[in-house]
Length: 484
Image (cartoon, rainbow, N blue to C red):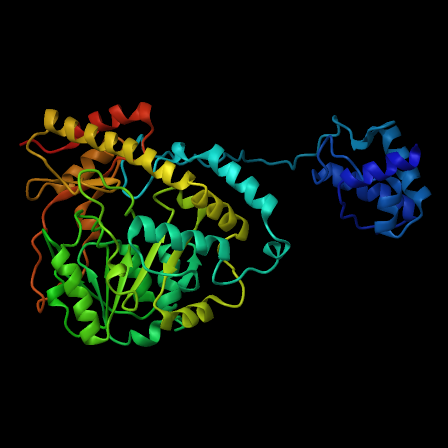
């Protein structure tokens, strides 16, 4: 019976780091070390201590030495011991507090905005927890043993197969699992393609010249490219999207053709064909960021440009908008010639994306749960968008709403010279949002001419607020807008 109790306690007892030093024998040193650990707070009240045999083996002392030390500390009130529950630190053995003449106040907790209307954020409360947990359990139960070893830098084959089927069906992507490389998101994809400042990139050898980017886009991406030694050249936008007819000596162009970020709207079909013609004629490359291609409301689905020429387009996507950015899962669909360089840049082992999360996503996609979640969220976000449009029509009819046929945000067109004051007024009312100017490329390019979308505006995300807070957020937004 005693032997059974010892084995059970060994499985649940805590590991201890104790230094046996100072005057006296081993028993005295052990008592002193345990007292110090309790007094300093390293052993909190209620902590279960290892059984005699386990601690004796760890410290290289006799079992009787540990038993005697425990018995003395129990007698002194430092420890408690009860048959069947082991030896624990006594609940009343509070650690000593260091004296302090000046009271130390905890730093104030940063207060977030009352209303979060920032772009690019899905509704975190709608993450499909039950369906994801079911997929995770199935994936864990069915995972082969090798899934728990070093990961393949290309990503789990189960996920790449599921993505190849889904992207072909839902986004018109032409690929096969061998051309898909799993990454942790679009920023990670850029790092793998262009490398860091050290020059360690997968495909940066073909990008010796400048990279054309849409004149409105994420500053974070431009900064990442600049840090990698890549010069970005702004490409003007108009109502039909990026002016790809102005591409000149660039060797590559970065586009958001399904839903231009942040101005909204798809790339016109003629320009989609034109950019492929340019890539073929110049030996160039198109980088396609399909950041929210699943969410469309008032238009027919727009397929990926990659489907026009898989050897001239690198297609990148993620689950950051469709599921959650917390998953850190994305993918690149690569032309054949870039697969090996990108894998070389990634390294011999998967160091970014959890293999278990990849297996769970593969099951989530393959079981149809991903399609069901996207359809459900498409309906929810459409209702959110409709409420935004209705609120503006009722309370600020002079403000034009654009870019709302798809995506998770809208652009509110403001009277000239009012954007900065509108952003400040929104902040004063506890609203977090961005002005359109925040996304404009800092450089002018006289050789390409100006675009036609340069105007004052607000980029308003309608996905992140909770349902019960959304009405108050819209009311506060309308109050922050400049008068007619």
